Image (cartoon, rainbow, N blue to C red; front, side, top):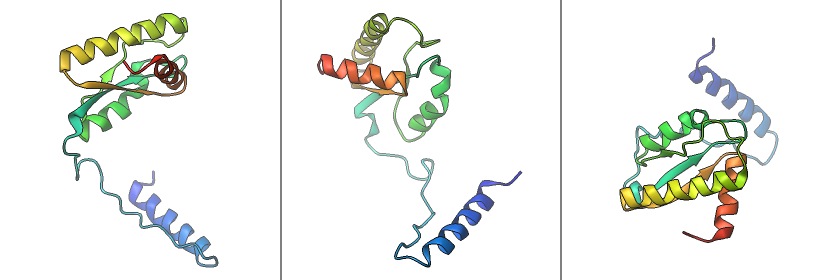
Length: 129
C-alpha cells in the first residue's frame, strides 16, 4: 500500500508537469496539521455535529476527533439513525443545543452533513436561538 508521503510526491509531480505549460503555478503542499498548531481561544463556542440521511453520530467520528484536536469541544447530536420525521428531529436538536448551552455556558454552533445541513439551514431560518 502506498503511504501518504508517496501520494503527495506523485501528486506534486503531476501538478508541476500540468502547470508548467500554463500560467498556473503549483501550490505548496506543506500544510501544518492540527497537532502542530492548535487554535488558541477556540472554545468560544461548541460545535454540535448533525449526521446525514440514514447515518448516525458515528459517521462524524473523524470530524469530531479533528475538531477536538484543534481545541473545540465537539458534541454528538444523539441521532443514531437519521431517518425520523424532520420536525421531531429539529425539536430534539433544539433541545440538545439549549441543554449544551446551559451546561457549558458557551454558544453552540450547528454543523451538519447532508440532511444534517438541511436541519442547520431550517433551524437558522427559525431564528438565532
